[in-house]
Length: 292
Image (cartoon, rainbow, N blue to C red; front, side, top):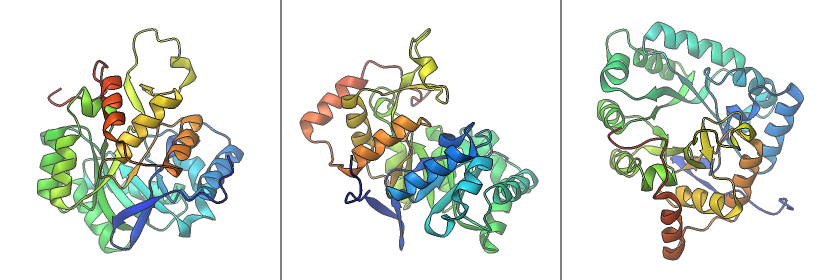
């Protein structure tokens, strides 16, 4: 496909900041060579991607992404995370990630994997909790915006009620939405609170069935992705039809390129397509489900 005249759409994150509707997940360069990382970052930026997301938990992704992104740094929105719940651990994560990614600030720094109200939400807001580090880093300019990634409805609600976060990173995915009833309530609350919504798991189909023959084709994924042309189109367009700023596809390079192609010509699902998408997902085993 000739992409020279095709613009990847962008949407508002916060006033004055627009992100490409497809984000580059750091797992795309995990366990790759420096040359491959450099090529992938350059190709993504050349096709209009300006949103990059990574975390210390993604193996060597920070180490690979830092040098590849360094010469492009001024033109991208770089997001990182900490899974630590205490201030000391979060500070260590932040400093290490800044060094690895060869930058003096993150455009977005997030509490990673907020799942349980007591052990996650209450812990980060307690005295000596991780929010002390994020607040200090935002004051001194090492962090521009603050957010969190959510993996349960209760924890997402509790976090949004405790702090005026800039954004939430959350699964907004066809199967979790339709078969798991996970997503609609979080999106609605985030909109009420004025948070930007960044979508995870945009091409997640379901939990891997036992002994699935294709599992080895996607070594970086812990769930089965949508893979056929029609499935990927409907699934991604479903996510982008929701009030999200951007979506992050799986950490598979082929699926990432497919997501770019779909996003470049994105139109919202019409009623017939929405019904087709719902029918695709309603009998599947979602990776997240409300109440589970």
